[in-house]
View 1: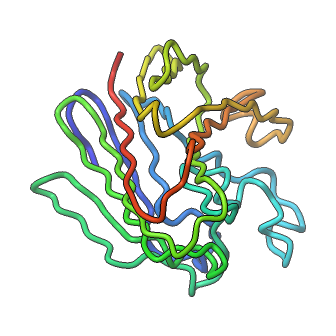
View 2 (view 1 turned 45 degrees about the vertical axis):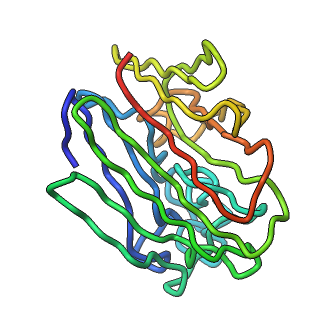
Length: 220
């Protein structure tokens, strides 16, 4: 989706059994003026694991390193049965939505997890609405970036990269935030991102069986 104020968004539906698959149903990538801000790290240098039974032991293939939730301590699973449902794109509203509950194993106890992404004139609005059968652990919402990240105040994270400064706001009463560096030593990934990328984790302060979260991405 190409929206106003220089934002471009790519979103993934489908299933986790596709050719060259990553476990990334529902992941959303955000560019600002052609600069990737919230990213998919991509694929490292090909090795035996890349094409074998241990493919999903590689961190780049796991949903925990895409822009996705970790639900009840579970990540998405690989296989065509782990998929999106109720996928919808409304071009007049510039809004994409899907239910990604079926991308998670039954043990995650997810009844419904509807993610929507809407382009507005000056922002990207991502919303997660969920229903769980059981609460075993607070949800963690992941966002991957290669820019420098600061948290100037609770509820605001600012990413600076390639001359772009982008603000993501979230509910400070619902989440705490952590920023974890990931050292890059793989030559293929290093040539794209440099020596370090970052994983932002919005960690729910408490967990209910149903609710919704909203994250707004805008220019500083």
